[in-house]
Image (cartoon, rainbow, N blue to C red):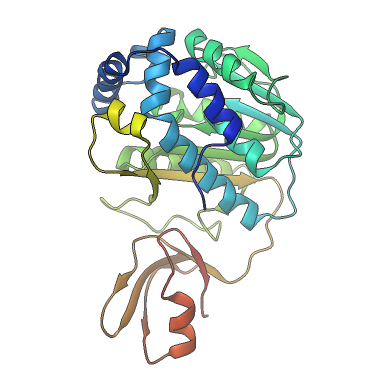
Length: 324
């Protein structure tokens, strides 16, 4: 999947960054990263347009790539689902909305909800560069205290990390109640991110939700102990991205956890998700899988030519058909 930003989004970002000092962006981006690394949220550091621009320069490319990848998985898992309305909760600069419109171009109603006025102001400026997002409704409210509008597709991307555990159950229930068809949760690919995603999974399956992805089943999560389920998306860095991040490596690997839930049961094949990077050896490929029977280890020998030919390019996060 191509993680490149849509042309209209690139135009909107370039217009906002015109004449802005890259050195100042880099300094603000470093401050934001430090807050995130110590467990803080955007409210603690993204409080004005300059900070939002630093966030866009340093974080938006990776969050867009991750969100687009998650939406592609959902589209593959439920190809008959075509949402017409979108609620982007904790929208920030609107990253998830842009990715959703690329995935489901028939969406005609978009609402971006955020309690940070600096984010919403910049989200509005960028949305104006898109013929699909120009009529977006911007809702200044906090999901912890406000009931959101309903929509076919509800997305909360990198939002639960900023919610206190004591508020998590109520927020998750509120997000599900707002969803007519789909709820998508995306979190950092950390043990803490997985704890929050798994809590949402357990709670909402109990409320009748159906898991679309990444799980290929609705059974209890088999992962335990210090292990956690997460995935990775690699994206190239532009020259600006390198400069603002103070990086020398021309690519970035963004780790993430996610959960996609549907009100309608999906039509499932006998599938398994690859939940770790495949290990290639001289003899074949070893795969760590999760399916409705739990965690599995599968080894495909090069001697199994037909199966090996199908799986030798399999990647972490892919789904494959599994044997009974």
